[in-house]
Image (cartoon, rainbow, N blue to C red; front, side, top):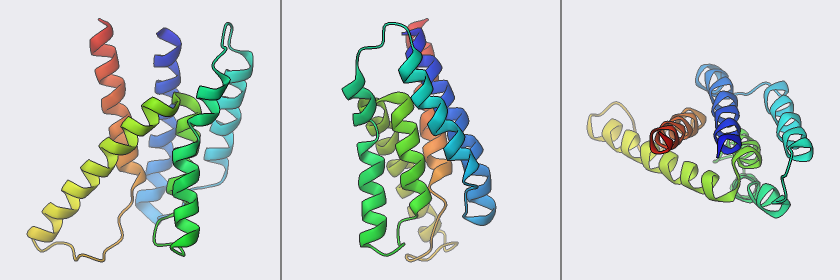
Length: 149
């Protein structure tokens, strides 16, 4: 359990580091996902007693699907969102990354609905999604810590 919380903490750190430039310029420097991708692979390869290799690689599937959607929809979904979800999934595994994605989608939808109803946003406005992923990951981490106490 402690190893999972450490991995989730690393995923949250990564998402928050990617969220700041995403909010500012809608771009993520390549070194951020590259560094954390290397760290996730290293953690998987050298972690003592780790035998769930399928779980590790399956965590990248939701992000890969988001990347594929980005290519199909010609950029209406940001490629950085998919890349960040791939790296997050490699840290957390398939179950946790799906929960994080679900929470992030719900938070983004609620935020956009409130923005539309208050007149601050229009239906076609683009939003930075990685901060929602970071918030959802943080909530997931806090819930995990509280449940393990």
